[in-house]
Image (tube, rainbow, N blue to C red; front, side, top):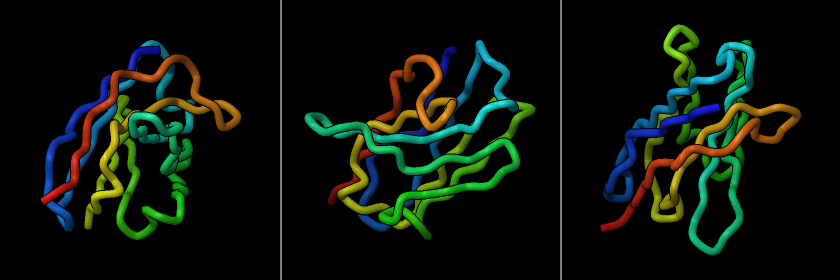
Length: 116
């Protein structure tokens, strides 16, 4: 499993970013894809996922602001983040999920910083 996340950056509160995750080494279209974030010193937090039928689920704190999508032809998952808040600052990772757990190691992730 090889995952490459991109699209992170620094934005002001209220701003938007779109993260991408390209997967290889596994049959992308057969897996639920999840997005998680990690702040130094804290546990990994799963923010949501998209299943193979395109159905999505999110944690309460990002509902209405974050949208996960996928393009199986490109083996890519996306995380559209709107109305970003300072608490969204973290390194964001994606991973294929099996029974709710990541399949393989996480990629390096992409840093998202939300501040004035």
